[in-house]
Length: 194
Image 1 (cartoon, helix red, strand yellow):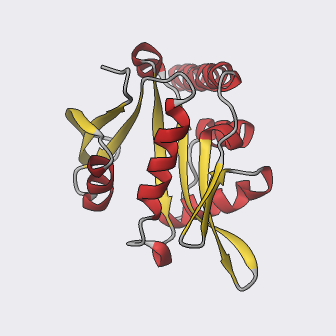
Image 2: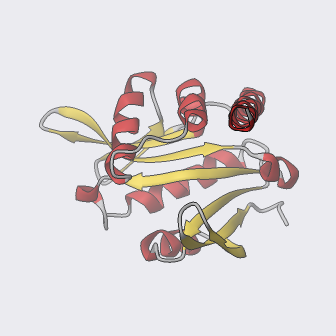
């Protein structure tokens, strides 16, 4: 009985997160488009959802994001998920992504959370993650947010370096028991932020 209650509580919490994001998403316009070194950076198009999920799974030993992240990505993709698209053998292929959502802490801080950023292994070291973050900063700064928050594992040197280079500052350090690693909570404040 208690297990069912905990599951119901988790589902209700997830539904609240999705609803919170739908409300926040109403105020966010679609992400623009830019090109750098032959790679197109823009908001995710509906037809790219499967590629984004496949890239996520390839970077997480086959696991998918939570149903909450999948729902936010599917419903608000063009507003809350950035993609990097490269041409490969004449086909457009998603080679990087940056998924965003809002949580309770973000609502209090008036920030938006970088839920996951990832780049296809064959594209690492080419500045794709940094360009995704730069574009996110530009986009969300114009959407009424005061900053972007992120959680990064301390052993993820490349992601920490990319974030710090773009002005993300550590706010707190903690141990994530689920991920079994030490992490940092960082915020990239915008001009009118704290």
